[in-house]
Length: 340
Image (cartoon, rainbow, N blue to C red; front, side):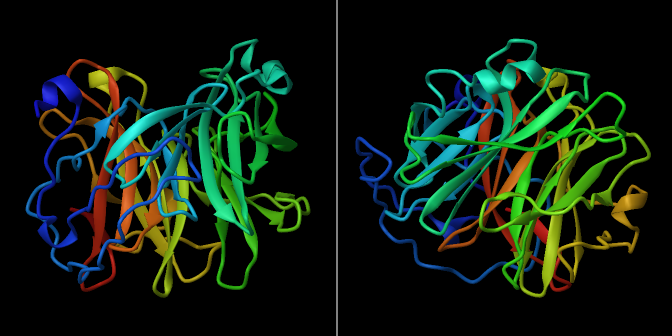
């Protein structure tokens, strides 16, 4: 298939992690995928950045987050009017699945200036429910808010608004967008978030409600006011990896987004890069950046799946349109992740 037409490209070096496709079905709960046999995680990075793996169907996406459903399929949420959804039976073929809030989300308009466009959802499945943290804001402003919605099915229109989690005002030095939930090995819940301003922050959550617990606001990454956003914390082995996006999105083929990572033995940090530089001091080890006709890959999420850890992100084609990118994740001998 032509990448210039569809924004899709062949996997590089994924022969041992090949995906098995099954037929798509009508609803999130009815989807099922053939189990994928786990392969040995590679430890040698490719010589060059990989192109995105093959995805088909409705692949236009911005700021994606993805979860595996109890039935074995996949549900993705992404930036769009009233938060948009996609489903897939096999992590390859995707179809649009409507909006989280088809009737609108009136509680967000004080932050969006009346726009229905809601940003950067973070999707997870825990305790028999889907949790969706999502952002309401306008470009260039930190008058922003993060809200929580839950659903037992994940389907469009099934979501219940659980209310405000945290907001930021123009007098604050942080920006309450780009949320990400992490539950640590002890079962504690934390929400990381942030964009520009003073960088990436973290708050504790109450597992019973998914809402904020206490008043602490911890700084976990920053670039002295430079462009950093889209945090994702993912546990692998003995480390918590903090993935972020550096530089600029939302400029089509001129976007300079790139995916960076640091790690810590604690979910609360301190996170450092491969060279030992603290992420609060601008540190970050680059994992994926623009190459060829793949522009500005970023706003990443990480999914633990049967065959591999999976990197989910958006990128821009030469046309300026944004598409869903998926690659597998390997870890080198020192435990640092790479895309392949």
